Amino acid sequence: MKTAELFEHKTVFSLEVFPPKPDADESVIYKTLEELSDIQPDFISVTYGAGGGKNGCKTIQIASDIQNRYGVESVAHLPCIGLSKAQAKNILDSMQENGIENILALRGDKSDNTELCGDFRHASDLIAFIRDNYDLNILAACYPEIHPESRSAVDDLKWLKYKVDCGADHLISQLFLDNGYFYDFYEKARIAGVNVPIEAGIMPVTNKRQIERMVKLCGVELPKKFVRVLEKYEHNERALRDAGIAYAIDQITDLIAEGVDGIHLYTMNNPYVAHRIFDAVQNLISVSVKA
Ligand code: FAD
Image (cartoon, rainbow, N blue to C red):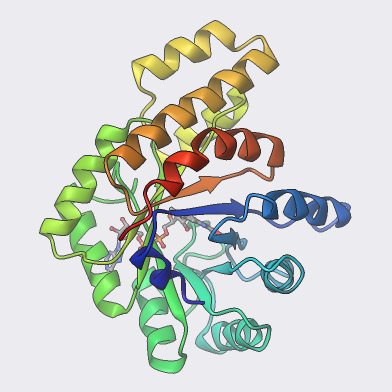
């Protein structure tokens, strides 16, 4: 099923996982998926390392297994930076042969190796390439606190609208810790003519290292309320985990009450945390079924 169709009837609840590292025990991800599939999410998306490395095969395999073994819709991420059109075609052909209908088309983060080669400069190039050559549902990323490379919010929105004009059917947002950024972004996106469903990306922050990495990579602001929690519990692993879960539940409750199109939970491959959050919000989601 194409994910864009899910939003016609309900508030969507989806999950994200990443494939195991090349030398890791593969059975762990399958145990994780088994536990996550109990949640019966609307779909599970699988990340893909930028640069077209070999681990991409795992993304395809896992996305295919999510559908075939666990009966859950899947989305395969695909960052295009450093890929030639021929390489992108090979990957997309393989995704299609494996029954994957939904692709999250991304640029990927720049590095010295990837920046100068490849046929795609932006996600919009890949989106147009998929739209011209395949019958696939296309997802794309968006940034409530604007992408760190963008000159301004206006510029960022202009390119987001362009991604939708090139063929993106559904958007998933970068994580944010202050819902105000999402509401502001959502309103401006609608005014700018971005008329596809926009899911809110929520990451339950459960350890300090993760937060530091996230702030550096994504340029996400840490609200005062969040910093207070972090400072109080940073030396108590369990307390910080529970505080991170409570914070995410609070964000989701508010988002659903505001009528968000969907929630995309960055699970960090942690089914315990995902279950605790889902258990707390599942009744809110079921009362949000659209007429
Ligand atoms: P783009 O849409 O190309 O945007 C990048 C920058 O260029 C922005 O500043 C934008 O405003 C500008 N821009 C966009 N289009 C144009 C244009 N046509 N001309 C000029 N400027 C333009 N990375 C991975 O490597 N693997 C993953 O699996 C992965 N999954 C992700 C999932 C989600 C939900 C999100 C939010 C991010 C994910 N990322 C992943 C990270 C993502 O690759 C980075 O954020 C990357 O820096 C930008 O990707 P993009 O697709 O948004 O790029």
